[in-house]
Length: 314
Image 1 (tube, rainbow, N blue to C red):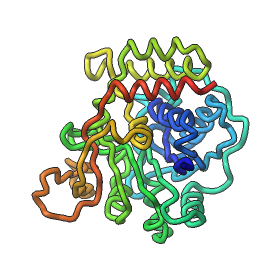
Image 2: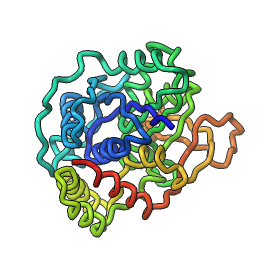
Image 3: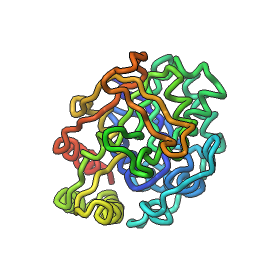
Image 4: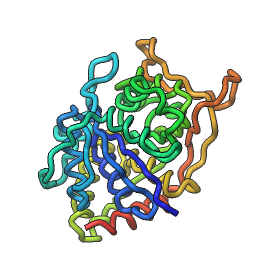
């Protein structure tokens, strides 16, 4: 079977880097046709460069990176250097990009790629705010029925939010974009913090990753150790989840995840709950479902998969 073609839309971010590396370590299952960068964890100038450097780390500098939207659709940009460091990828030493950024805007690349492919051939994997995806849908609505699936990391309901009491970071940054995507009719799978908080990275696993001894593994371990420091302070534990790799993990091993089809609405008016993903888990509204919401993850085999695939990289 031919590998599944994916576009990773990203705002690296240490956990974004792990998601990208997991995909690149799985070439028989996934073909990364391009990376699109969006403003999110840090501004676009850094996320685009970070995406390039992660590709270089994996020996895949040949994959193009398309810079996208510099700000959310309506609101001013909110970033997360307080989690990821000023660079977005603190904790490691990465080579400068060997190639320039692609000269096409991310939104146009998404549209052109989906329209040139067979219907149902391209899967979109947003790991950050949904600005690029929504803008592509607004600019060219014809892409929506041609997309195989959108599998995104974002949202939360049972765990509340991680940026406000109600909202998860990616949705909070651009709730209007999320509203566009969730009302588009596209096949949609959401990997919220209700699920990703179960993707717990332990100190023992980090030691195993570093012990792989490859350049990629050592730099990835450095990223994770820096990222974990924030979690240690927030949760008072030496364990912290890696959120974004769950998107790629779901594509590779959907059997490790459990969820249900729900109606999900995005709050875009209330100042108190702006960006909340309102999940109708019990179908109390009787509205048509628009999203597969993942809630459970079998953590040990997920991290075994992550370790094995990262070990394949140089």
